[in-house]
Length: 93
Length: 132
Image 1 (cartoon, one colour):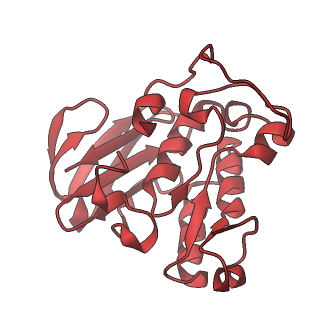
Image 2 (cartoon, each protein chain N blue to C red; image 1 turned 90 degrees about the vertical axis):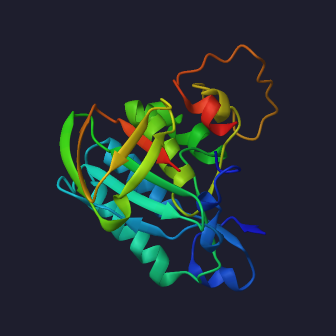
Image 3 (tube, chains in turn blue, cyan; image 1 turned 90 degrees about the horizontal axis):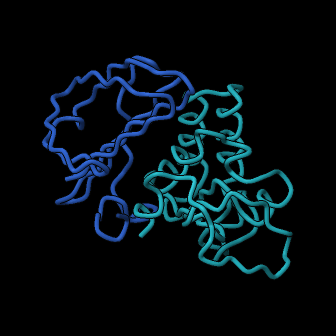
């Protein structure tokens, strides 16, 4: 994945990490990284409990493919996520 | 060039340093002693204190941790896979220690020659494909 997505290049060669706001900031970490043409949005539940969280930010907007399931999804600037314990979501475009 | 050290000043000579602090924060989050807020604070500190062209090396295991403190599954439990993905996606250099690409769940003897054959049973759903 890192090889194929320029947003994930290492250090300052890749896209800058822009944090997304999480309504559950103790447990959920989310960010986006963008290159000229590619983008990654990642949302992590860093707890062993299920969470329902609102994630928001200008850079959340867009149409993505869920990297692990292949499902296509579109996001606006605010989205709700229901995450299982330790669940992570990675969206790419 | 990688320094086996973790402070900003060595970047005058080296390209990359181990991010031990983030590693310990991940271990602490898994033990419910720290939170995602501590993780963000640390990443902000990295950005402020290290040169822009510095690479921090991110790892959920390495030759010390695996041998002395346990595999990532012992330390991070069900969070092992989550933190493996996290360390690959933040703007740093991920380290994949021996066998992690296949989900090795054994402690390896420190600096001893070992033979990891194809019999490692993967403990991770999606990681092997993710690393490929």
